Image (cartoon, rainbow, N blue to C red):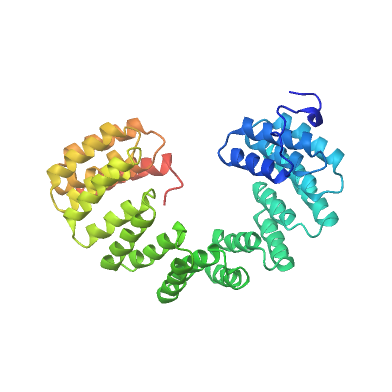
Length: 394
């Protein structure tokens, strides 16, 4: 590392470059492709050619921070503050860096100082709230976001974070109110529509959720969250035909989103369109080989069709392919129990208890199996053990 960040010139701007925007664009392109070294070399070139531009320093802090090179980032932040003491950007990047280092108490103080000195910088309310939340002060974070949203009523990020704080508390009426404000004040941002649809759905206002999310899909056709939430409205209403249709649209627009396949297959299964569900799940398994939902949903599909032998076989395949998945054991007992193969189910759960000693679900299923057998003494014993080992499970 160069001792003086002001002199860390690794490469010079190309011949004939008189417009700093060319270097800025090139540096950000490297940054967004996570080519940290190339990004920093380009910021260094910008600092050499245009030493009075704060972005050459502040953006370099961001780059070094995201690259995990925190000591270099700290040196660059100090250089930025020394060279540009009256630039809010330099102070904001220093605060973000302190937060990235895990010193949120210090970051809270820095953000407070930025709010006092640079009251036009909305990010100081956002950053301060982030650090307060990291310290466990959710109420303080929410209050700060509320103050920021009041001071910057058109700032979509603050409006979104403020509404999300109500969502985290499951205060759906307040969340709905805040999302409505976000839609009114920042109509070009999808979060207010997607969040408003979610809140309306949670409040049982399905028609309102439908209307908000239909509007979202029309306004933001390239935003996956809008289309996905629109599909969930029909899914949660158990309108399986409409849900299947909307999940098909999600897959057509956003083919790399697994939920279009997993939820789409569920909708087809619930509509008893078993062959279509099977084909979709096999397609999903080839597209997303690291995801578990393809094989597990195929096993559930066989169970729903009452092909218990095939369901057992498919759960065996799940366990062989994903041995660390506890559901490969606990969910596999359902076809065994339906086929009255209770000894095999019990043996499988005992294996799961030994394999996953810190998971409560195998013990719960084993005790439930004793209830299913009407073995009250064994069930009482197993539930007693369960309370002792996992006292947080109701």
